[in-house]
Length: 406
Ligand SMILES: [Zn+2]
Image (cartoon, rainbow, N blue to C red; front, top):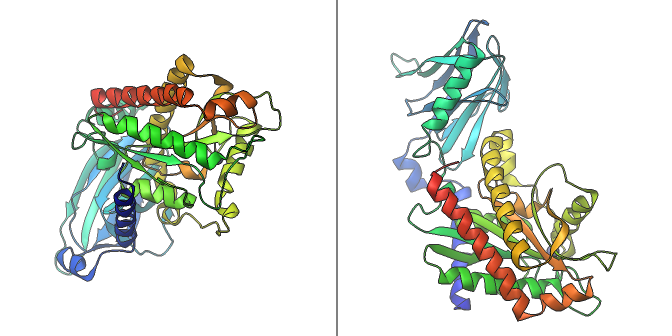
């Protein structure tokens, strides 16, 4: 592995990412005139409701419906919503409320919450004329639940190729899936320390390197490490790195520690606002302290600040993928290494918060357990455990490629 080159690539990509989120350059602004939303409004009643957005120019847009909860979604190229009332408004008639904002770079979205089942009757855009702005119009009519669900099903069926999806969602968009392996902690932050002197940051780095090497031998995977040496990296920088790399999968590697020395085995965690157990909540809190340990201020997640609740849509899909991969992983671990009593759990890990990248955190074993401590330092165990991860990754991408989009 060419470490200096790898590190250079990492920082180059991080710089490009930071430049990108800072906004378009003057040259880019000249070539693409930004569209502004001047006003949005809702008119009508419980039988027929019209949503209108006044824009400074015409745009291509797409409209689709989603259930649970019932919504109509309008996807647009990047539109600047500098409207009074923030990023949301109250509805009327068939629309109970609406929100708008950026969902990713270059893409904006309007979400209409529905008061009841509807069908989308008409959608059109009137070009700007005679001093009047362009008007994007979506007409909804009251419908039966059955008709609504049929529209939802139609949209889902039309999802090949995926609509409105970031290319990063689709494995192998160029035949190559990018996997980011994230060895936890590093540098000033040692993570857990075993009574026998093992440092979490060291064993997870060894594990991550071995895993990256194995995955890298497989055609079709592009593998990146968030750190390849004993460097500290902040939690949000790990997430930003994965996003800048347009990762299709993010695997964070950690080793656990617990007051009861008998507790052992591997476990897999996915992101959830509601922790599955008290212990999962405590673990997430401990892992989230990494930045504090390293003397960094906890930054607000700037991206969630921008896109707020709209990210829910992308996030739900991402979570489904994360959970699917986590299940694969538990199954594969189960065949080769010892699992924890509750092997699949969820909690609010900051490092799993990329809204658009399936992400899991693996606690490969307990440094507080003598046998696990020995295994974590053994090449034989590491070989079996990394084989498990490779098998789970293969299964994950095999299923995704077969389905196109879930
Ligand atoms: Zn850790």
